Amino acid sequence: MFDRKEYMKKYNNEYWLKNKERLSTEEKRECGRIHYYKNREHLLKQKHKYYLENKERLLAYRKAYHETHKKEDKAKQKKYWASTKGMLYLRRQALMRRSGKSVDDLNLVVFVNKIRFEGINCCENCGLFVGKNYHIDHIIPLARGGKNNFDNFQLLCPTCNLEKSTKTIDYRGKSFVGGGLVYAC
Image 1 (cartoon, one colour):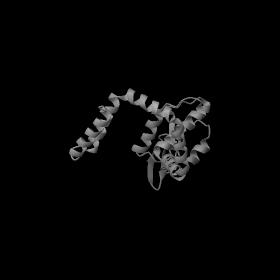
Image 2: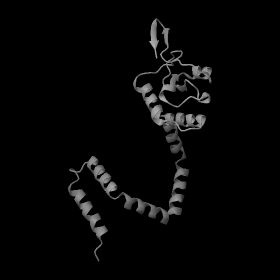
Image 3: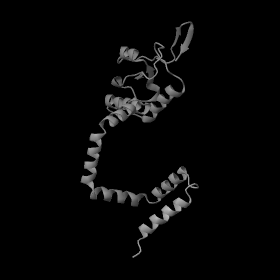
Image 4: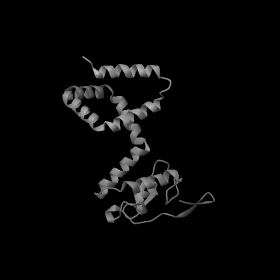
């Protein structure tokens, strides 16, 4: 009896061996993407069916894997939370928690990109270089009806932000003198 699956497997392997130099990694990835999007529904159904048939075995494997790789998982988590993406996620979650509303992600992303790419790296109150240790402050605090939009954000060092507390103070555009130079954040 003819087994199409085995035949195709054998054909693909032979084809790959003959054309190994011609097929680059990027071409293989692109072929894989095309195949996935053409057969997406079928592949997802297959994956779900496999999961249902092997649920206990897969869960046991995951549990055993996590038990043996605790240190590596902790290191990955620590690296993620220290990254810009992780820090942005934590800040967004804190804003959502305080406001009780969803945060307009685009405004926060635009503000963080302004900080990173336009070289804004000093506190808008005292002029201290903040680097990665900064607070995104609300000019009008959420507790006083402020919004989570771009016009209501300002960059402060932790000390200035904690001193400001829930007061409504706009430090943006403030100029100050330091070492004979005038800075404007």
